[in-house]
Image (tube, rainbow, N blue to C red; front, side, top):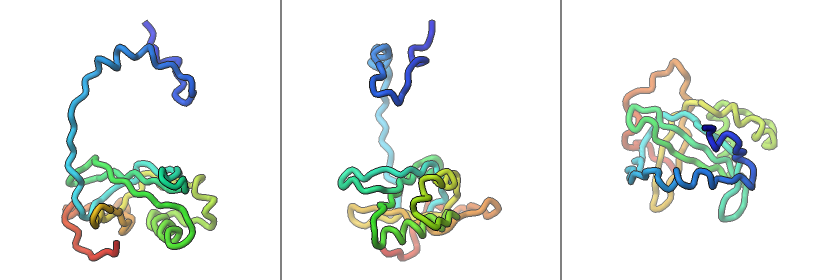
Length: 161
């Protein structure tokens, strides 16, 4: 018997998924409750970087997915968004790109260079103030630099929020 997903085009707006309705209804769902990732320093790699639009205002933003490399919480994800609007946001974006080793002359070159950001290793700091969480790119980590066992601990630097 052939797999009903063989002929599906996931990008087609009229993709018919009804052949999988029975399997979907019977698929088990487990309750997952992940603990919030605590504030602190982490060694991460850039798992994804995409230009998308903010939900609230429709402004362009660079959405980062960062995978924690360990030793604590390895495999967990952090997310960072750089909203691309005039003013300080552009300076913060430019600094984050530079930290990743990407120097652009023009912002319009960003989309074509997104693949250059993938698998870049970084030391980041996660900091929460009230309801707002931010991820700061501290430095790029080169392959021969030890990851250290201090990643994933309490933040010790006083970073502006």
